[in-house]
Image (cartoon, rainbow, N blue to C red; front, side, top):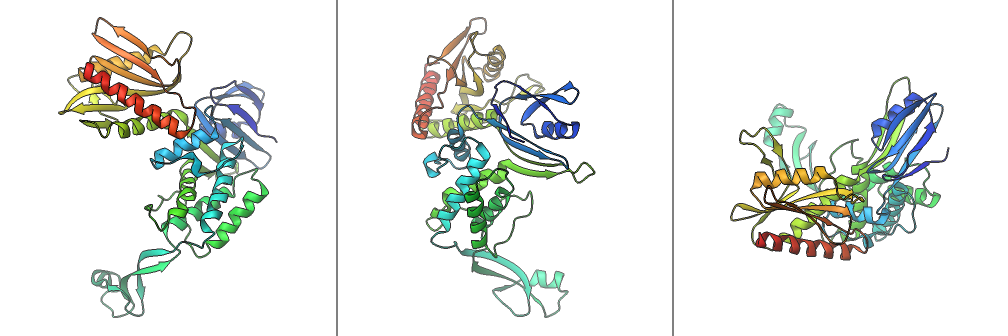
Length: 398
């Protein structure tokens, strides 16, 4: 069956499948699923993008939701959240139309290129029981694990080999990538080749935390491949029910509002880092004196310990009637709690000129800004810096 292709926040789609598939698709949270009767369901795309494939004993259903910003821009946003300084020039996705196959294909090429000079090796700390002393003797472990017997000897030593975090992450991502449907044959060959080069590297347990690694001169050639591998491992999943229904769900789902809000918060905080004061993402405040109504604006800038600027990001587009009223209500509450006369909302799309709400009764001005996500990464980051300058200037005026 051909994939069902949808657009982020686009038109719905009617499809027919059994209740088991519908339940698995609903639990993936990629799309909304509404029953229509007689086995028909309406799929409603929202602000989540990616791919979900559900396989049962009788059939398979695959749903793909494309991001409005494009695959390359989404990868830049995701990559920047993981590593500020990421540029989408670090990878090449060509003219890919589907998110997950594009990421896997880019991983195969990036990993092949990274391993071309050879598999990276490094030092890792090993603790084990040996028949001879090697490295440092662990007296406490010898007493508790070996009950004071002379052999085997509990030791800790440094091993120099390929079984390091960088290779473990690449291996895990390639292994997961092979389970993705509709991969190109050359991509599958590349992944298998990379995995053969990493023979002897430990496999990461399923759902385990990714081992930490630090960019350095030695692993620089791995950088692009590792960033892609981490994106895959953080956002992709394969689930099996293990019951009589025998349902397997493979997915790669990204919440666009979370990506946008985190990106705006991180980049604005970076742009303000060289200015007087301190910038606090996800700043916890209370609306009432008894601290019963808790709130958390995306970003607050303080000077001398006092708030001077509050910002909240919204992954929404301006409509004909303007931005949603609820956002203005929320920002007014933030300004009230922080005792500020100005607040700023950052939207993903809208008019070039900011829209200003003058709430005369409260003595508060709320400005809605639209952030253009198009252009190159450098252009987007330049807009962020200009916006940060504008926001700080308004704080001084206030």
